Image (tube, rainbow, N blue to C red; front, side, top):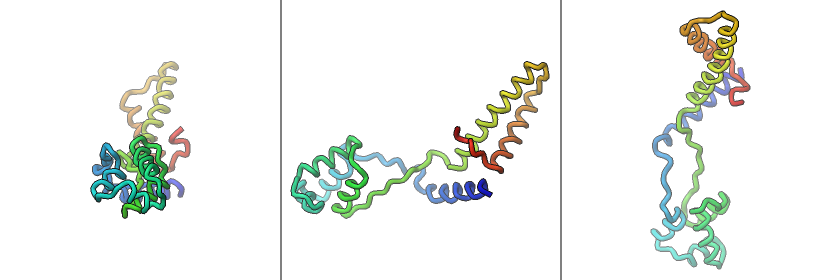
Length: 154
């Protein structure tokens, strides 16, 4: 039953994330979103500092620099975004569907196991044909997908 639940959850997430695939990643402006939006609004460092709740313009400059170099925290991003009347959305967008990732990984693991067994059989002079190996891989992959493999990512 766990395998079925995991598959349903993957399908739900794939559905939720599908609209983002192909749209993201959205390249941030070279100066970062904070500075770009602040400048587009005609807002000074001093004005944004006041909206954030600090009198130090240097804090805003640090936030802008931290966004560009990747050291700003999500908490600070949300604070500044709120002051700019914006939302921060952090979303992991899989490059391929989650379901495809699991199928690919399952086939990779199964192929490794079948190839090791096939190699052992060759060493014992019990060679099997290429087609038999391919069929074994397909059958074992399907079985593993149906049952779920707790060691899939090891």
